[in-house]
Image (cartoon, rainbow, N blue to C red; front, side, top):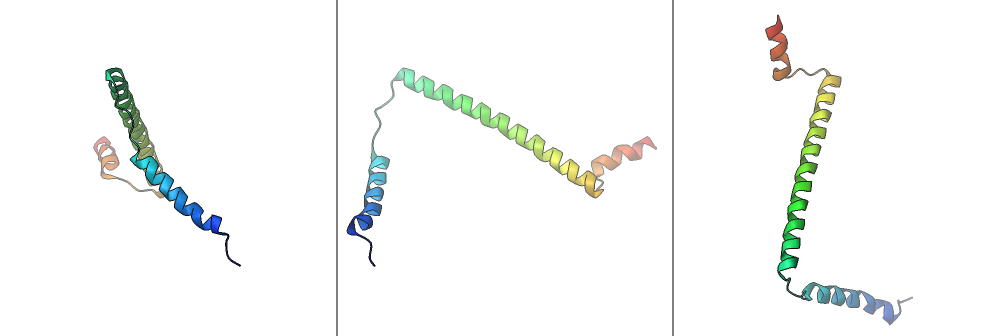
Length: 85
């Protein structure tokens, strides 16, 4: 039982279409388009920075919770406790 010839050609056509789209050229941007692209890039950078800060806070909370559950004392947490005595 062999596949029809049509189905053996389909993957080749898909690859050829993907390569053609990859080499397609877009028209150059005008000044307004460039400014809009720069603004979008700046917004994306700020959003990425805020997301990274939120992710770091979440990681810190996870680490602190883990340490609390396991009963692990860190040097930073032990130092203020030693000074109180």
